[in-house]
Image (cartoon, one colour):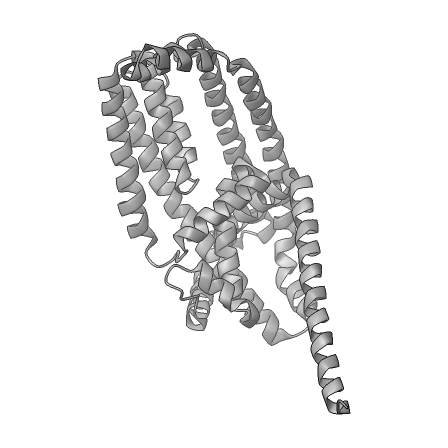
Length: 379
């Protein structure tokens, strides 16, 4: 006869087992629901994420303007916020107009190259035999370039709508920033815990801002150098190539490969000279390699301790969920996850996986960043 204690132990084990199954099932359902919402509301969420990043970038600018004085009068905070919003709106609209103009130039040139591009690309396979060259030529001619161009043009048309939505979101964030500390304290319900949450947010802002500033500097250098190469070889789309290289450089790993391939493809279609194409490809490849693997890590230092494999996974996931905008936002989102998981004990294993050396952000770094940002506001 089985003792009652054994029955109790077995019941506890079964309840624990069923509880784990139920928890796992709920997590799977919750993940599916969140993923569905991310996909369905992608346009608004992408605009909101972009607005939050721009808001964090310009918070210091607002504080700087608010510290200025016109004679004995100090500039009010709301005037500083309006000035920063005007600057952001002008910059975003100008950048969107430039990108749309260059995309239209590329698309129109693509249509003009559509007839000779298949023959030029198929000639690369001439060494494999005439049958292979003919097969490649027939395959390329069966591709409807016009349909793809219309699709890209339609997606590019959403850029201006997204820009307007981002400006609206940034404006509302500026309006709410004055009461953010009070809302955070009341929401958490504990002053000490609210201060800790504020430090985590400050660390996220600091790391994302530093990443974007360094990435922007490296992207400008890379785009300018590629533009110089395209101009030296007298390519028709030199300006568009330089601007698109600058933009694509924000996409980690994949962007530099796409940009180099784009330059080589334009060069070969325009010149039909394998030697010139190979020279342009090698030069642009060296530019991307040196800037991406030497200058970029040197400027980043230890400020961005992200796993390379984690960056690829984040790039693939957000690219699948949000498309090309998700690729641009993949690293800032990963930085946010790393900082948050580093300071939540239950999520610390995730931070170890996301970090490059398996060392998540220490508590001392959190306090150092918070003190540095406080000193910057006070100065």
